[in-house]
Length: 293
Image (cartoon, rainbow, N blue to C red; front, side):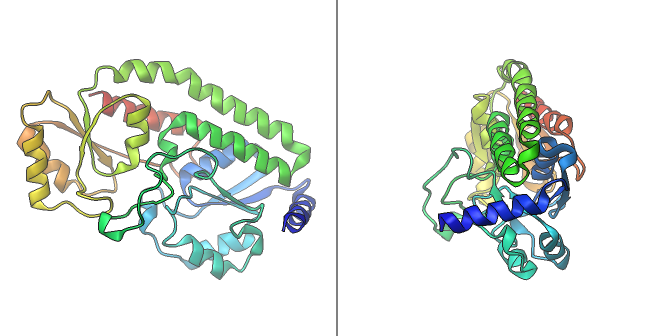
């Protein structure tokens, strides 16, 4: 198996040497990272619209066409795309981007994850037994993903290896430069109610207390009873904030706002389709501002 993978890697390297590496990114955040690390050496196509929840998409012919042309797929992983990426990959019939091949890259496989080891029990909601997949909400972790991506690209295009590594280092430095300001700003937070567990990474990074979730269990819309219980638990606390992805329903957050008077922030979780590293850092900045109250 090791010899076979080495042979595939060498064939891929020969195929892309001197040409752009065609990358199929599952989300626009992954597309941003691929462009940031790959520069002019890569051509990136994003499959999931940035204003949609990547958990709940369906495989489409356009995804299969993108995967069919790809030298590499760059995914979030940890089963975030399990509802559509495997089906789209089968439909593409491109063995280069199958899991386990050099042309398949998952962000979640490159770093440690929070919430690892949860039981695969659908009664507990949309759980991810391998861990929380939303690593892009932790910029230092995401920078490590960038370094791992640089090494994978270096396997496919050895002539540009040092350029990939330099770009990954530059991205890490941009993250490190902003971290002290983010941490200082978050010191003023009285806590946050999140809709989903996606921003748990950022809350932990900044030591912001997560007071509760709009969802009673991951992936399950809130019931009236759950929202009333949540309001009851928050009464008498210092004023916190409510934050949710812009594609999530505003009804639950709006109800809590009416009852408690807390401010609601609806924010994107992905950059635009052609988003840059600066766009990503600005997106995180907006979430930091929201969590800080």
